[in-house]
Image (cartoon, rainbow, N blue to C red; front, side, top):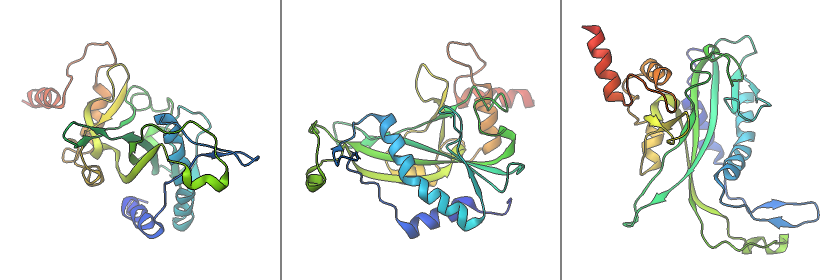
Length: 250
């Protein structure tokens, strides 16, 4: 699997299939449609559900098995492997975020990319297979715009065109995790890796994060040593980390 270009092949399939991500709501057997809320967790589940058939199609096309953990808080969403003994598994995690608009109409977006205090430090904690069994880690990220003033009502199928989705302008990318990672947590009170912030999907798709030129090894070393919430550490930024590393080499 070492010579298999997962990223290029997955992008190629998505370009061929052109999946759609416009969904009206949840329909019940009595033919009632309930529009979704703008809750990020709900929308994250929706995007994961919509991309799932393409994940399995890709796996079938290239001879992979897919494993999905039963535990909700386990990483990753999808594991690609030849079999369970495969020591070059590939992780694909689905992440979503929304555009945060400024007064001038421009926007920024960023993601949380999973824990830096679990499987990165303990090989088997909260992960489908040992972290050391994975050769690649990829993020499929979705960015959308939140819609305001959505009618809170129930619809019938004949009125489906009247439903205004709770999100719009969906864009997506797939890229290696370390290339979109930033050097600070995704939020102040969690132990999650934050991505860099960007104002276009192209920046994420190209993987222009601070670790993209430093490499995966530096990314893992940095986040394995990053201080946990409310704990003191040797560094709190990539510049401080690199300065310490430079001194230690002397």
